[in-house]
Amino acid sequence: MTTPRELWAVLETLHDVTYFTPQARAAHEAVGLRGFWRGYVAMRAAPLGQAGPGLVTAVFHNFARSFLARALPAIWAVVAPERALAARMDGAVAALRAHLPDLGADVLAGPNAVLRRIVGSACWEGRALGAANADLPWPDEPLAQLWLATTVVREHRGDGHVAVLVSEGIGGLEAHVLRDAADGSRELTLPNRGWTEQEWAAARAQLAGRGLLAAGGGLTAEGERLREHIERRTDELAAQPLTAATAAELDRLDEVLRPFARALVPGAVPYPNPVGAPRP
Image: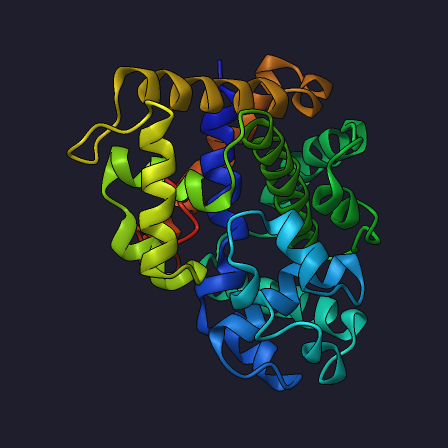
C-alpha cells in the first residue's frame, strides 16, 4: 500500500518544476519577476493576496523574515497576485509539457479524477497556505489540473508539518539545524533561507541546551526521537485527505505518476535541493 510519504515524494517532485525549470523562470520573468528568489516568493505567496513579510514568514515558516522582506511587499507593485498566479501556472504547465511529453490527457484522466477528490476532501482548519491554493479555480487543461492538485496536496502536508514543529517548540531555523545534524544539509540550506552564521550558531546552542544536539553537532538520542516523531506525525496529518481514495486508487496513482516524477530528477528538479524533496 502506498504511504502518504511515498506519495508526497512523487507529488512534490511534479510540483517542484515551478521552482527549478527554465520554462517556469521564463514565465516569471515575462511578468517582471527578475531573479530566482523574487519569482519564488511571489509565485508561492500569491495565493495569499498582497501579503506582507509578516504573514508570509509565518506560513513559509523556515525563511528568515529579513530574507523575505527583500521582495515583500514591494513585489506587488511589480506584479499583482492574480497575474503572478497566471504566470505560475503557465510556467509549470510549460515545464511539464517540455520535460514530460508523454504525460498527456489520456494518461492524466484517472490520476486527475482521484487527485481532485483528494483535494476536495481535505480539511483546511489551521492550514493557511494549503487552503489559499485550494480556493483557486480548478483549471480545464489536464496538465494544469495535475500541477494545481500536486500543489494543494503539497501545501496541505507542509502546513501540517509546520503545525507539528510549532507544537514542539521548533522554529524555522531550528528545523534546519535539526535536519543538518541528521544529513549535513547546512551548506545547501543556509544561503537559501537567509539566516546568518550567528543566528545558526545561536539555534545550535539553543537545541543543545534542550538536549537535542550532542557536543559534536550530531543528534542525541532525544534529538533522533524528536525528528522521528515530527516526521511520523506529519505523515499522520497528511493522510487525512487521502482517505477519499481507496488503497487501490492510491497505488494506481503512484504507479502512473512515479515514473514521470523520476524522469524529472535530476534534470528538471535538482537533487539534493533546498526544498528538501527526496528522490521519488
